Image 1 (tube, rainbow, N blue to C red):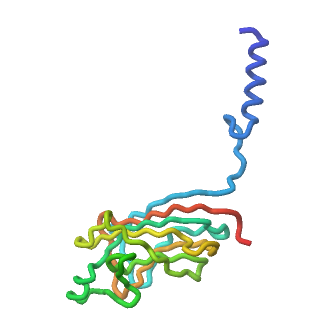
Image 2: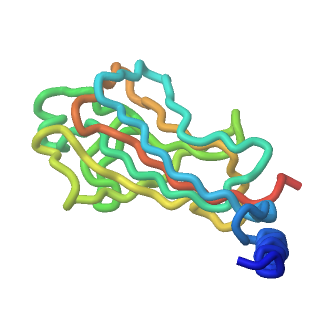
Image 3: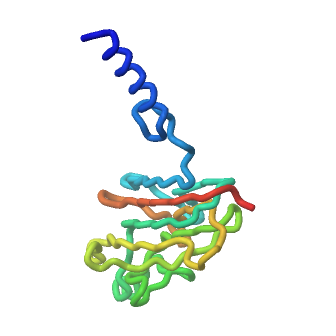
Length: 177
């Protein structure tokens, strides 16, 4: 190979690596950061009022998030006949499905508000005490969010078993203004 060819490859390599996205070139800073994480809940427990933070992006707001969770639940008829821990704040309707004391909360800490998750019947087994729910956050466009957590809103400790999890996907924008 001639020295002219070697020099040509060398110059081409320098030009190529200087192009944004070229091999070895630094990429411009992202305008948006997208993340997904899953928290296995098996063998964990939450006492009344305890929480697990799923996302804290302070001071950058979460533009959008999606939370899915598989958590212990109670069938309404079972809860009524057995006198289980269905308490104020634990609801059961067509959107939410069977009752659960685990709630998804979102906002700017310490001001977190409950979100209204949708029950996913095809991925749930309420007869075995396991229900899957999901929610898109924020539920109101433009609502500022930096923190998302799951919280035990009941009056008894919730013990998680095999298959219980919480998954969150977030997309962030620029700093809070």
